[in-house]
Amino acid sequence: MTVSPPSPMGASRAGVSISLDIDNEWAYMRTHGDVGWESFPTYLEPLFDTVLPWLDRQGLRITFFVVGKDASLEKNRDAFQRLGASGHEIGNHSFLHEQWLHLYTPEDLDRDIGTAEEHIERVTGQRTRGFRGPGFSLSPATLEVLGRRGYRYDASTFPTFLGPLARLYYFWGARNLSAEERAKRSQLFGTLADGLRPLTPYVWKLGSREDLIEIPVTTMPVVRAPFHMSYLLYLSRYSSIVALAYLELALALCRASRVEPSFLLHPLDFLGCDRVEGLRFFPGMDLTTATKLAFVDKAIARIRRNFTPITMDEHAARALSRASSLRRIRFPGGTA
Image (cartoon, rainbow, N blue to C red; front, side, top):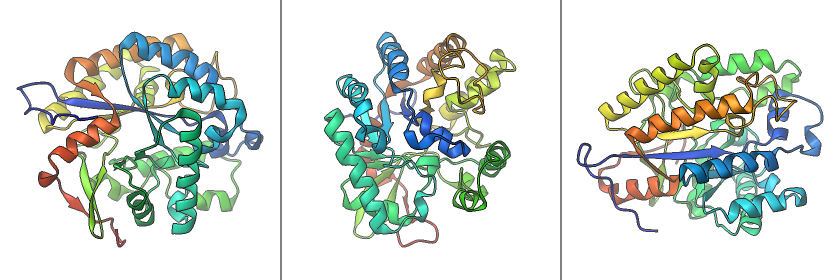
């Protein structure tokens, strides 16, 4: 697909890429330290029953980041074939969805990412061109593997100063984790330094190759506060008016800063406590599905009033079309 570069701000509206990380029920249970995740319980059918018709009604084409293990399971075949036929872009979210992916050896990374690719393509018919690490995990070795495997973009950075606070909140809720499991998750949600990363796309310097685009999950310019949908839904528990005003502020700052946002969705933005019983520890899971969808409709309407929705691959193509003006960055502390 050929995508024209965005026109200067003011001449036409800028784009907003929208992506949904398909973190399945077992992945949340494992992250939380709950027993029973090893049987890989799933909510893919009710998720797709809700989100695919919703996207059709909205006239939206977005990017789904798929976990390879889910794609490998026969019980999920029909769900993923349905997703593959829906016309949405499909990206790679690793095979095992381990938030300590940055600790993998290069060989293990290549095996994990490659195995996920194979299963995702087999069941959806799409070859993945984009990657997002689980828990925003990223390393120089990951970038090298993505570069060698011909990926167009990575989307694993989350430029916020609030990562350590999110990690503290996570560990407070995940009290069943062993010391070893806690150590693996010690970098979950990033560090304070991540708040200094760029908000706009840039190019990773990978030896002789300089065309792997990084598309950050956008945080609020200046203050670097999150405004992905799960965060907005959490705020809406106290006041939907305040949550939507917060979103409007984030969008206004993006326009003023000439940032084309990359907006993040999760499955539990579309599934409430009436559809998923076992994940009440997750923020916002005291809301019903209908309540969530009503808020999501309002939030997406505000985003569309300011930006034109595009897929992540289209966002990467726009960035590559002006590659000569993009920043080129080496991964801190690494060779990439």
